[in-house]
Length: 482
Image 1 (cartoon, rainbow, N blue to C red):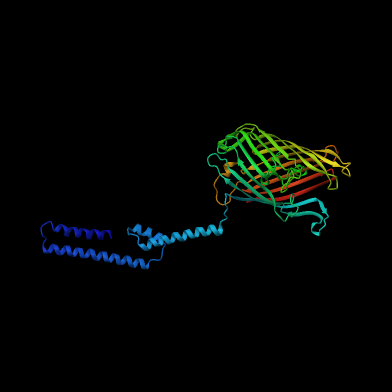
Image 2: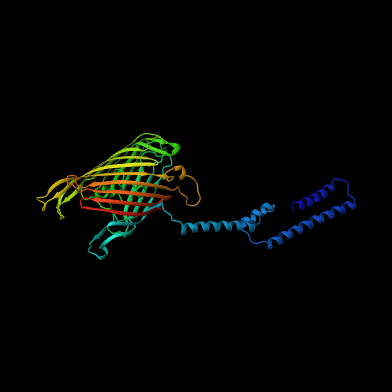
């Protein structure tokens, strides 16, 4: 079509120029008229062909038609523009529909996650219990399939500080656990707290200070604040439950660190000092305080300053304390005597240098107890307890090497790792009473084969001198997160 326009323009220019030059002969005029007729006929023929091709061609999106028209050098028509507008409206409708019907929304930033455990267990010691209901009776049980823990968690930001990282966040979680729930069919509130970063968090080389208010785990030792995904052993250390430290408490806790060593090449950060200090009710989760006294908890840990390649890396020594008051009653009755001291002290050592590591905790407890038959003759005395827990483990594989985890792979690839370990766990409920301690020896293997999934195999041998029993347990468990 451009060529035809050139012909037509040339003919018109020739006619226009003829008025200023010498008059052409009749023969020359006749040739020019013939040329113009041919140009007009060619243009008409081209327009007819375009019209026929448009009718015969299959329907295409308007945007494609406009692009093809532009590539061919022909102008877009009004119908093409209207088609583009229709396609845009259809796209906007589809996006809004997907958001309304297939997308979970929240008023604030939200991450949904959780942990689920599926376990198979066998014990050489049969279990039998009685109950007021038939469903609660256990008749010589040696094996069982269980879901011991199922946790649903929500975390996010209520306010995000882009300049200094003084963020306001939250965490809410609920779970069903055989260790904490009286009715395992229902979820119980676990974590429910707000966190605020008092100091800036943008630069990893600066100190940190965070304040958490609400229901949360206690910052005591190593095992108590560890979440399920960080625990190598299936069962918790004995002291965590027998001394009541595994319970979540409601209160205000400040956590921070000082003078961190940062190795940017390995994304490694190790503060010289980490600390935590707080005040809580001390009456357990989801309940108000049962007396006017508050419980105090604190922890201080020192890490040897070193870079990532040093043999001193991640050698930490820490100390913890917990001090509070508990209500005392006449044994076997609901008669209140007063309050007694509840004190715990702990010392822990950690050396976690890939591929091997060792942890050790020593815990000492003191609990006031009441003895007697009436309020008048009740006597208050103290019972001292202690615990020793040591864990040795070795890792082989790439699970804990950040360079492998950062590699881009297709599908759900994740570096696999294997972690054999051994744990010694001894708890003495009364140091003044001989032969009442319980010792658990655990040998196990953890297999990490996905980003949030691991398989655990534990063999426990328990020597319970208080009950004069010795037995073994075999546990196999899948723990997976989402």
